[in-house]
Amino acid sequence: MRCPEGCGRTLSMNLLPGAHPCWTLQEHPDGTGSLTPSVWRKEGCGCHFFLRRGKIEWVS
Ligand SMILES: [Zn+2]
Image 1 (tube, rainbow, N blue to C red):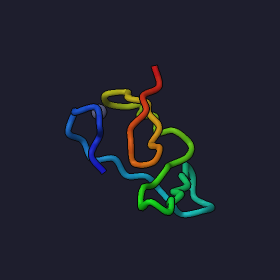
Image 2 (spheres, helix red, strand yellow):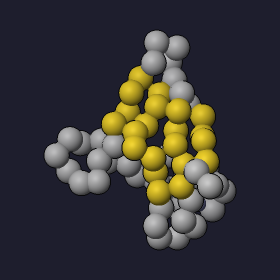
Image 3 (tube, rainbow, N blue to C red):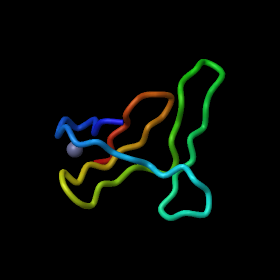
Image 4 (cartoon, rainbow, N blue to C red):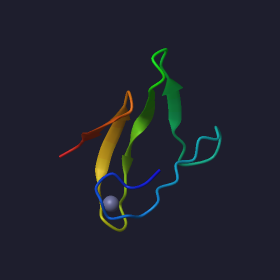
């Protein structure tokens, strides 16, 4: 996915259990997805957000 903050970088979230860091993608019946835990880019733009039901929720 693209960084939602607009810096244009591509974010890659590892979904493989056992690797680290690793995220869990939960798919909902309505076709949206939620990602846990939050995504925090400590390098680059530093954005920190949740993806819940396909929508970005910023962590301030
Ligand atoms: Zn960014």
